[in-house]
Structure formats: structure tokens, C-alpha cells
Image (cartoon, rainbow, N blue to C red; front, side):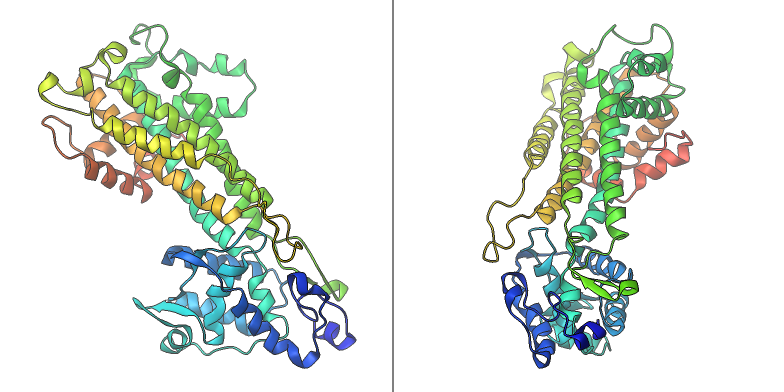
Length: 466
């Protein structure tokens, strides 16, 4: 990079302006001030601030990418970012402002404290960025000739928050699987759709994955014995759990792989190719694949939500389940789970709305130079929101299914479904007299998000691998 400057090479963002100003040549003595000015000018985010966890994920994602060695960033700045993470200096970053073709606005806000500006939280107090750095004992670095652009021209908001969303998706899809399996037990469903030979007739990977997971969770259940099912054929929301949940697992796994690949990438433009002694403009900051993979995952989770909500209402209907209406033994004098249907319906509706594709940016910016963007931060955020809502819907289904199992009397549950039932009962008592259930659903959802249900399944030793 220094050799490129000495040669007088024309390098985007190093010897030229940014965006539409690429046609502006910078004088050598103007470069240091330009790098700091580029950061200030792009700190245009508005709206709610990112949480501490989200800010840390973003900083970590940028640091990982810097370590690939193509950014041209001064090592001093990389060490400063690491020091901020270690000391707990968390810049205030407003979440709205990036279109997904490099997260310029959030990264500018995140790194203003490196030049003594912006805002940051340290030990519970929000203060001016320079003050936070001083309070943490972190010296301000000196910006090198490409440092401002190297800090900004990457996709760390999209990737960092996507990593958090993947974790939420994995726990939500697992909870939905466990809830669906427990509903099969409470409904006394016919398990013929889980026959391995039937699955072999259809070379769809999601279908086979779903069958494998459900058979493992239900292993040991008396539902596999002839004549134990209540009816010859069940509603589709029970019959088709395997293909729906299997595809959701594959879709969220694809999202996880996309995040892994982004973290293994150098997103910088221009990128420093040391072996070639060149700086070349790149499009490695483009996150179209990440965005579209997350859109697909959100749609898959919405199908899980639709089947879950349907099963919840079916379990409460005597005509469908042969169980007391709203799963209460007291009849019409008690509400039982009747009003929980409204919360389930609200969650499913919100999930369905959030799953609608956002699409690409349609308003060209930067004087028409930036005429496409995949809107990745917004897509990642809505997919994460889907996962949070699906977790709460799964919590309701788990509680409803556990009540149905209890009302059935003597049953032999599968290894995985027995673990799910026990997990529910550790957090939520059987419903007899009416009581406020909302706080119990939320507590169960939080326990799922903390990994409790996954640990319960692992402890059961069912080998589902979900």
C-alpha cells in the first residue's frame, strides 16, 4: 500500500474520493484528514441502538475479517479493536442506515471512538467516545493512509448479527421439532408417515432429515405399536411434520454455512493483494447470498409456525383430538387453554408477515453509482425476529402438548418426547385451575433460548442430532 502511494497509483479510497467522488484525486497531504472525515460523514445511523451483544458481534466480525490480511489496516488499529472488546467498550450504534453493500453507517458509528468521537458505553455508562476509551485505558491510534476506509468498507453488521440470528434459528427450529413430536404423542397420531421405506420412495433431503429426527425422538413410544394410533389418517399439520421441519433444518443450516463463509472472507475494497503488490477494487463486500439465504430460512421457519399453530388448535378441539375442549377437565366453567389460541394466532401472523421477502433496494443512491443493494441488515433482523417469535410459539405448543399427554393417562413416550415433557414440567406445572399463562410461556421460551431444551434432549441420549 505504501508502495502504491509512492508510485502514485490510482487506488479507490486511498488516492481518490469515495462513491460518486471516485473521480476526485486526493493530494498526498490530504489523505490522513480524508480518512477521519470519511468516518464522520458516514455515521448517519438512526433508530434504536444495537444491544451490547450485537455491538460485540459486529466488532468481532470486523476483527476476524481484518485478520485475513487484505484490508490494509494498520496493525495498531486491529489491536485497538481487540482492546475495546476485552475492556468492554461498546460504541453506540444506531441500527438503521446500511443497505447491505458494505455496512458503512454502523461501522462508522462503531469506530468513531478510535478517533476520540462518537459515543460508547463503558461499565454501564454512556459517554463521549474519547472519554470511554480513556476510562478503559485504551490509547487512541493514529490513522494510516487507508485506515478509515478499511474500518468501514465491510459487512460486519450483516455478518455479526447474522451469526446471532443463526443461533436463535437453531434453537427455534429445535424447539419446534420437539413440540411437534410431543404433539404427536398427545394427539395419539398415526406414525405411518414416518416409515423409513416410505421416505425412501421420495429423494427429498428435507423429508428424510425430518423422518430421521422424529423417529429418533419418538424411539420407544408405544405409538409405534400396531393399533395404538387413534385414527387411520391425521390432519396435515400432524402428518407432514417431517418434510416441513426437515426443510427448515436444511434452510437454517444453509444460513449458518453462509455466515461461516462470510467470516472466512476478506470483504475489503480495495483489497490488498500482497503477493501481487497490488490494490484492486473488489465486490467482496456484497452480501446478496447471505441475504437470500436468510430470506429462504425465514420462509421455512414460517411454514413451521403455520403447522405449529394448527396443531395447537387441533389438540384443544374434542372433535379432532378426543380430548376435553381447551384441555380442561372442568368444562365451560374454566377457560383452560382457550385464550392461548389468540397468542398463538398472533405469533403465527407476525411470523408470516415478517417472512415476506423484502427484495433489493430500488432507490439508487450516491448519484446513481450505488444502484443496487441486497438490504441484508434488515433481512437478517427480520429473520432473527421470526426465530424469536417461533420460539415462543413452540413454547406454547410444548405446554399444550404436555397437557394433552397428561390427559391421556398412561402412555409410554419416546426417549426424546419424554425429555421434552419433563423439560416443560420443570418450568410449567400442569394447568388445572385457570391462571395467567403468558409469563410462564415467556419463561419457558427464555429457557429454550438459553439452550435448556437442547441440553435436555442430549441428556436423554436419543441421538436425534437436532
